[in-house]
Each structure stands twice: as C-alpha cells, then as structure tokens.
Length: 28
Image (tube, rainbow, N blue to C red; front, side, top):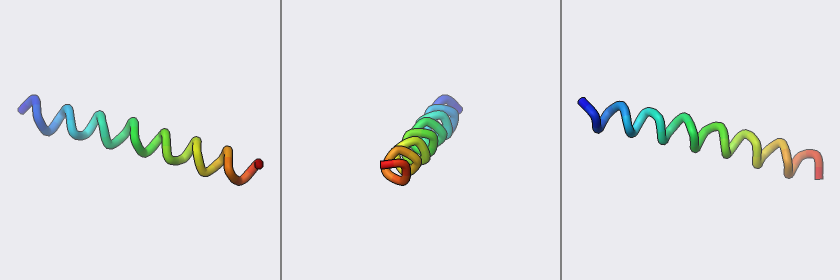
C-alpha cells in the first residue's frame, strides 16, 4: 500500500513542478 501512495505523491509533485516551469517559460 505504501508504494501506490508514494507514486501518487511523486506524480503530484512532478505535475506541480512541470506547471510551474511552463508558467515560468511562458512569462519569460
């Protein structure tokens, strides 16, 4: 059960990071 939770958390963190990067590039 720990594995799916860990993967979900990582995916959410990555998704947030990607969104922030896209916004940064868009503003640049």
